[in-house]
Image (cartoon, rainbow, N blue to C red; front, side, top):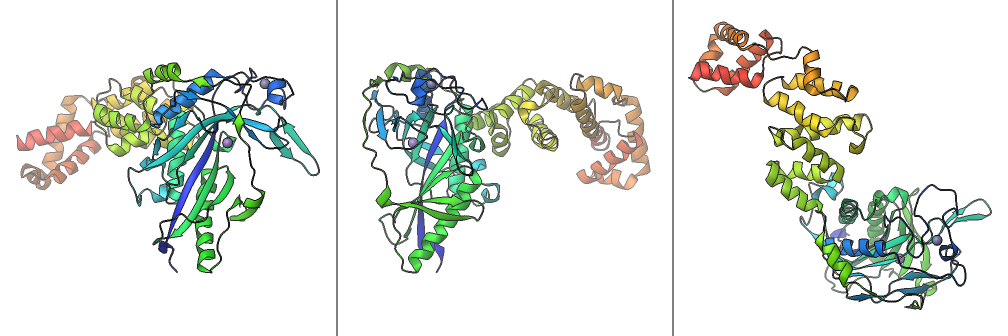
Amino acid sequence: MSESRYIPCIGLEVHVQLKTESKMFCSCAVSFGEEPNALTCPTCLGLPGALPVLNAGAIERTILTGQLLGCETPPVVKWDRKNYFYPDMPKNYQISQFDLPLCLGGGVPLYELAYPKDHQKSIENPGKEVELTRIHLEEDVAKSTHHSNYTTIDFNRAGTPLMEIVSEPDIDSAEEAVAYLNSLRQILVYSGVSDADMEKGQMRCDVNISVRPSDEKELGTKIELKNLNSVSAVRRSIQYEIGRQIEELEAGRPLTQATWRWNDEIGQTELMRTKEDAHDYRYFPDPDLLPVKTGEMLARVQQDLPELPHEKVARFENEFGITHYDASVLAAEQLLANYYETAAAGAKSAKKVANWVINNLLAELNERDLEIGECPVEAAKIGALVDLVESGQISNNQAKEVFSDLFENPDQSPADIAKAKGFEPADSGEVEGFIDEAIAANPGPAGEVAEGNDKAANFLTGQVMKLSRGKANPKQVTELILKKLRG
Ligand code: ZN
Ligand code: MN
């Protein structure tokens, strides 16, 4: 049976560690790679009688996220206890938000470049926005490490502010789920809310997934996949699970609501627990924490909203006259976007600078395994280098040589490197001579140029470049040839 007879319905719950100095309910530092249990106090250890104090910075970052994603923030929010026992949470409840979360509604726009590379040419719903249910704020638990016959526990992570972003079951495919995560991550990193690095566990994802026959309205039985920790695991597990669920239904075996886990090594999902042993969390308002009025903070956040990736793309297109695709590549990462803006500022051709950054700089960084933030060459020097080409000081090929040198000697200026290499424009009298020589030696092509053939002009330019040993500026040469032969 074909899979198109079934419609998948996917919702994601994403936990994001906020980038704050201190923890959610105490003043312990948030930091990675410290000695285990070095960053703890009675509150984040969950000792009896220790009281929580709210972290205003975490609340503000969550409100900011909501504003960037078009959510509503209720005038009053509150904190609730989510009760369950687990060794990584010794007070036996997690402080979370139940019925009055910080953000409601909103959506995540799916950027084209956020889809998997192999899928960007076949996006089903360009411009789609995935609807959100809510965003709430809670605390992270400690981290257990299981050894051969014992377990150790590190409370450094316990009490780290966690933002939980819950989507509607509005995602139709594994590829849309990937785009959702990448787009979300881009916005979180852009706004400085989180580093959202899945590999570091700063962003963790649970997937709810069901399929239903295309002629049925009601959603199918929901399966939850827990704790996916990479974008590729999210994609592969969803693809696998859609196939598995359709196979079960086709074989006449109804599904039961349950929690499954993804086994990345064998590439299959495995049953974790069924609904019978699901938790009843018995939420109730935390008596240690007062509700919070959000109005003042909301007003402050609204005054100073950062530019979102898609807004930056539009601005780059307008301001610099570059294509939508180039603008999207440059705006995909904030640091790259900043680099380009600095390079293009005051340059003769912002468009050429964009080409240079995308085609040459990114390739060079990739080859050297460097991030844009580690680029040894200052942005302004790329602008200056492209200007040398634009003003006819050096040729494009010479600029490439200067560019490689610049990586080795980033303190030097492109103009100095060009000079040291003897890349000076051939003097104009000399170039005129070469042009006359080329025309005399190639009367056929010269005649064609006069009749309007541009290819023949390129041919003659090539001849002049040879005669000048690459010193002449090809753009100027072509112009001079056309002037001579067409008047
Ligand atoms: Zn603490
Ligand atoms: Mn949660």
